[in-house]
Image (cartoon, rainbow, N blue to C red; front, side, top):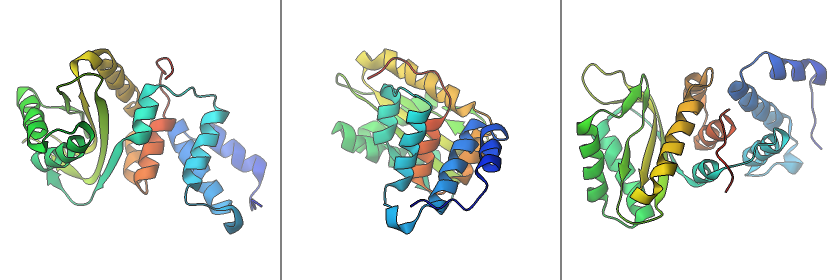
Length: 216
């Protein structure tokens, strides 16, 4: 059984009304994880609790959600520069698109030279067009100690790297809009930096408030 060693009414009020949604959902998951008996624990407990929250809020998952659920999430230790970041992202996309990592790296560098992909303090969204049809993927990166981009630019702690073919232009724009809405959620950056692992980072994105664009 799930043993709840706290006053349900008080705790429910606290989580429902005293915290922004992103922090509230993460806190709910954390509390229930701690209160769950070992007899019913599983390696996928966090994922199961997240799915319960999605059903509770009647969130209809769209294509962006499904891509994030399958996306590579990197949690980088230490401080790196954007060239090293692009090398790591290139290796991820190379496997997804069956393309040489060097080619993807060159596309990322070319895009960065055209204009920096740091669009807000602490946030960068490098995005490129790749050859082919029906191709689109996202890589998510967190770097607590920051990624160095250019002189005079604040370190970046959150990266959404996008790559898609030209026929996916419309969804490319939808994904950019979704990310913009997600990161504007109250206290999102603070929650991002405090997340314990890759799964919590993914859940922050999936549970963030935003407008859903149709269904899959």
